[in-house]
Length: 340
Image 1 (cartoon, rainbow, N blue to C red):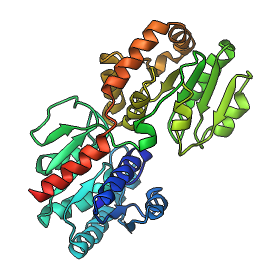
Image 2 (image 1 turned 30 degrees about the vertical axis):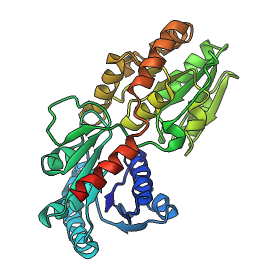
Image 3 (image 1 turned 180 degrees about the vertical axis):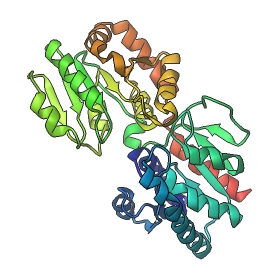
Image 4 (image 1 turned 30 degrees about the horizontal axis):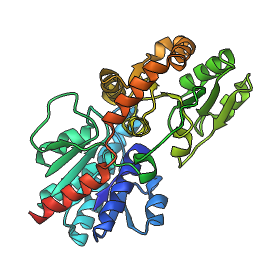
């Protein structure tokens, strides 16, 4: 039983892991949110999808917090039925609040469970269940205390990304704010593009802000992308990247060896994006730029794009940190644990 839902950062590594487990003749039942993006993606894979009510608590408004106990209770009742009914050999949760109820039921019913964590600072569900998990698979070395059942495997990436190659043409800046976009980052990128007209800017604007960003373009060197489910096509073209610092996008950037200027989202839960960015900066693969200093983005891009030696060192550091075999390692480890 694979449990993942919510953002692409939780769903996509779980999808890749599902592919690897199915190659090993395992049957997958996917548990996710009824309204989540995961339903269509999972059904296209030929996996059975089972919805479970779920809602977040941290950072939500008063009304959402008042509704949360009832939603969680419904999720537990539904999860109990699923775990009892399917009697899975194991439950694998890829992060996010949708995992809480199925993991609780797996624990009560004595089912082994495994956790995938995409960020250096684990989410609250991961932190709560980690001590009782069979194993926790970490994308990066943890920022805090770790336990004996934790191992750093990297984030499972699709083969097209895991073995990524790019051309360093010395003139293409890729701006990544995530599937929903990042308004502050997008607007700062437009300023940089207007000032650095000798460079080409590809801006993944996000569905929410695409029309706004399009209306504010004032130079001919911008190529806007609303959304893509094939980011590798963008990575192949990037000389450098300007990006938020979610766990999945950083794993993809290091797989392609792309020097990065990282602008962590300052309101991310537990400031986990700051921790992710600090790790890449500590190994020499990235530069960190605080969001409140985005006026300096133009000079940062100009300096990095014109420093070939630094870019080469950053690219090498990124490739050394990449773990292209993460999906295979995690799948094999799950199989070995169940066989023991």
